[in-house]
Image 1 (spheres, protein in one colour):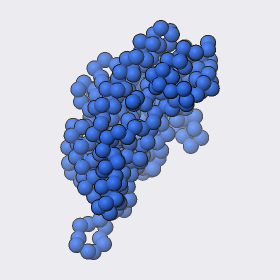
Image 2 (tube, protein in one colour):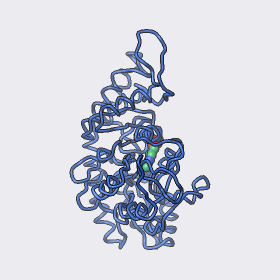
Image 3 (cartoon, rainbow, N blue to C red):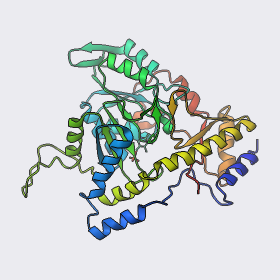
Image 4 (tube, helix red, strand yellow):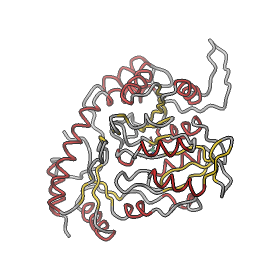
Length: 380
Ligand SMILES: *Cc1c(COP(=O)(O)O)cnc(C)c1O
């Protein structure tokens, strides 16, 4: 295999003879205007109108009641787990096929990840795997679900919508509500993705988005916690802004809060970006259609959105036949100055999570050997 046609096709799509990145941001809206506005106002830091505006826009887009802007997605996940009731020594059900931040956030919340398999079609946490785990290890006690083998409380479930393809949420909600386990959605990759017409991140007790530089829209660095529970949203705002008790001049704090707020400077950039989300989504969808058509002629599977979902096509991917095919595809495309990347190593292969429980991981290991991300930026 030489993948010459693949390289040519991608070069054509991005209209360049140079290096083609995986995902680079584009700034062609009001970003400059808004950022300069914060400089002119001197409000670049911890307070400012753009933070409020960013939160209002995210409430609207996600169809939730409350949004809290934070410094990045990882810290958003950490706080969201706490808000969901996760305490030190608990277990949190999640997938091993994810970016390391998902597992790290569980660790920061002083809990242990339990790695369960993903579904083959969504590449996200499998409701069936969660159900099987709970049937085997779960035990209902007065204060919630416990793992009867480890003796630890199972206090949250953290599914991740891989590359913007939504998890089978209806089935997951059924299992988790049966066991009284709150869901926190790692929606870091899925801004603009819908499941049965509802936005990702709006199904669980809380959802968390990331606006890192490689995501579908960026604030430079930043994230957002969303929830349908307004009281929880207020508590989230309080905890992420040093838990300060309002007072005209005294410094009073009623909790060990965090300095996790999004600076106004970043919020300004974000507002400029978010205004263009619909255009970005359309632009990427057209590329996905073109990719699907092309890869069919190459005998390579291009991953499409699953039934009942509308994916944002944040990072697009192909599924190669085998590990051998994957390796040669990665080597040849990268040598050809086309940036491609394998899907993540499974979390239990990393030294700090190798001791954690994992189930059979049949789908995760299959996908780990075959999925490769290809250039997915918004095009000019
Ligand atoms: C990007 C990402 C995060 C973390 O977001 P940051 O804003 O970079 O901290 C968390 N989980 C997943 C799955 C991500 O892709």
